[in-house]
Image (cartoon, rainbow, N blue to C red; front, top):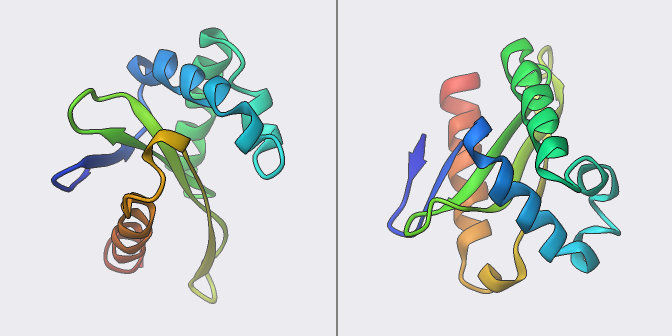
Length: 125
């Protein structure tokens, strides 16, 4: 887990299904263009449970790493950050990320990308 004064970045857990689904649905208009598949996989709590299970399997297989960004005060999911398209030979990958509209313009995503980049280099290699 990565912790700042405002948020945590951590692997998704079953307990996150409710807040993940709520966050995705509340930001439907913002996410439908760039996150249509993720949005479609989180339309209900049950869908989010399945999504979390799928993402944790990908984390374990080291094919993709999906993390929740959690508000430190409420522990609710307010965004996602994903390391994907990983090429282990060239040591490269891509980021995908989304953040709830109410948490935009606070510097959270810039900090989350920086911290996750550091994690990628130092922990994942």
